[in-house]
Image (cartoon, rainbow, N blue to C red; front, side, top):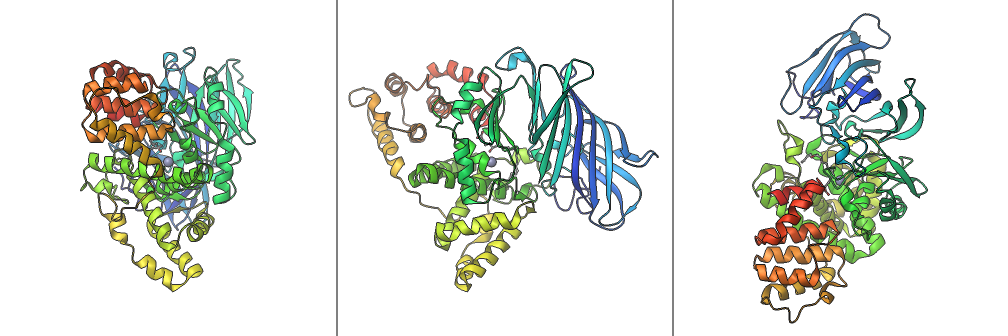
Length: 579
Ligand SMILES: CC/C=C\C/C=C\C[C@@H](O)/C=C/C=C/C=C\[C@@H](O)CCCC(=O)O
Ligand SMILES: [Zn+2]
């Protein structure tokens, strides 16, 4: 086994000696064997002197051969024993020592295997159309190494290109610009070509292959999905361009060329994944009323926070997610008003409380910058980096004097770090430098009042509890109190109680009732008769209602819960329902 990198505890690559500049993937997709096979060409530049080996991350890959481009002699390499979390280091002995600034290109012939965790192979029965197989990838956090041999660390920013051969009539899309396609010489396949010209980390490499159709919804946006869903999907995400334009107004021009959306089959495990040029989203966003599109605002915000300015390693993941939630809520505030932003922040704080309860308030993984040595980042995943990170930034915004001071700073932050991968210490140093430069020593003293250690290192809830405006929450609180206090007689209640509620107000109302722990089965019968929650389409409401019913052991909901966990695989819903 190899030593992990000093830059990233979750990678074996020698990141202090070599940096990837470009990866080219030349792969054939075989649905029968459930395998990708072909070559990865990895161009690296030496960043130290006397570099004699190249170490790439792999996991569950079958390596056929390694060559050094331009060298005819065979290259010595070894695939080290598999670490249970981080996979097998591919150690290549270079034929000579490389000096800083010199480049080399490794050409690795390989196949993926059944254990390649980045790949989700779906049988036709698992798709909407039921006719064709489907493949999608999910590389965040450390699964890119099971798709291709790479330096699989967010510390490394690379460009990539690809040629992907897929069986007809399927189409391939990637987190990159599509640059053309050719018929395969076998007459049964198509070769799709892609290029990602903006430097990005390996966890953003993404591939989808399936029966895909697109609808243009904006000047730089197409919504893709299976044909059966594409009209609904295009209707739901028609506001995409407004979100991008608002992000640009808040930060810097959008750098990635296109912003397309892919609506996946139900088993996609996340709400959305910010794959550049092609955000992946769950079909559970298709509420039919455009009410769940804040996930799209979130993924668009990643175009700057995470994709352009990236965490150095997974211990600083809050720099991706806390910032992204902060920008997402700025976008929501701009488009729907400040009360909507405040309401979203309040719901987020409740979510944070729940996750900290679940992990345990002394669990070290609830610190904003946890130690991830020997930890699987997937096991550390929670709302902590999202919501504790947001709460820190919101607190700082208030502390330094509000949006008029903070918003120019956040733009400067993106300008300063675009194209880089940074640590929390670098983030903090820039904050101090910027505030001192623009607002003087008094502001530095203000920043010195922050309990930085508690924010970053202590587990549990944040050291400061932000107060959010309750305007939109009041009606929910009032109705939940009335419902909790009243008996099971219909008398005072009617569908009008919630007719002016937004979907998220309905969610809060249901969560508050669940928290009150005082809802009887008779009360649930009555509420369902009046509000008809059991058959609601909106998945957020459906989930909140099912959780409330399960906590009350309300047996009539059981078949509906079974149906819900069978029709989609979004972990946000599935895991608490199973629990
Ligand atoms: C401290 C934790 C460090 C690293 C974890 C990083 C990645 C973990 C891995 O499990 C991947 C996460 C991907 C998330 C993608 C999208 C989320 O924003 C979805 C949130 C839940 C949802 O809305 O469904
Ligand atoms: Zn995110």
